[in-house]
Image 1 (cartoon, rainbow, N blue to C red):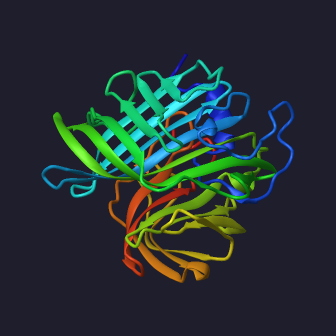
Image 2: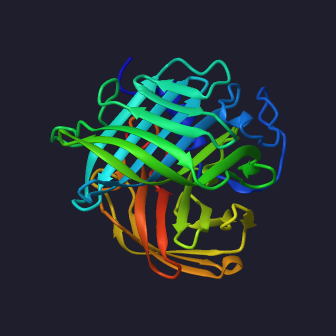
Length: 356
């Protein structure tokens, strides 16, 4: 087997690489042979859902070390009938450089419901007590491969995190069921996590803490070229609210008009959104080797929340290279105008199958 696992790559590439790809709420028939989706019930649905075409557990956020160093992190595992892919990426925001970059692969698919997902050396798990429980990430420097396409030695980073929800989980759409192209998917989030753990970067072992976001999504989605590209935003506001928005893009990068989101109030109540405006702004950055350019600033206007936010990327080196699925932009951003807070922006503009 070479570096590219063709079957898994093809399956994951056409099904998407982020919780962001979700369209307006509503149930419908699953793809032929797949189980029927039912309303999300927690903690039951923290476990895996074998039998669906695709499932992922995703977390991202900001970390600080004891000396005040600031980092953004990304950790996700994708599961498909052909196997699993996991990926971590950690960016030093002060120095604008990637300090941890590992990708893990397993050709053994999940065959039972479990709250412990293993992909090579990578382990992501949920543990009770309670509905919220805690998540943990174990991402060692061994058992994976570096994905950064550079002649320089890859960063030998590792990440070990504990993630504890500080707000109730929020179910998107109708009882956690949303539209994913012609077929539905299940989707929920933990919009605010207390994150503690250890980052190994540059030969140093750093105790870190911060705040994170968590998503879990699964389903069997029909292929559709207009659901392969999107913009996705997750914002944590200092007033206790949280915001998730997504919009689909056509292959030429023009919005399709399909968009939705959720405004999470301070008490954890989720209000579903469909009327809002997303505007990208320059400068536009084309990472070395990428086939698309990515906005470094955005305006988000959400009338229902009386929010008009301007966002700016915090670092240029926030493009995530993938070996087995299309690469994408996953970047920490600051709010420069409007309600105070921080955001993560995900944007997928690479041609399907590119970026590996």
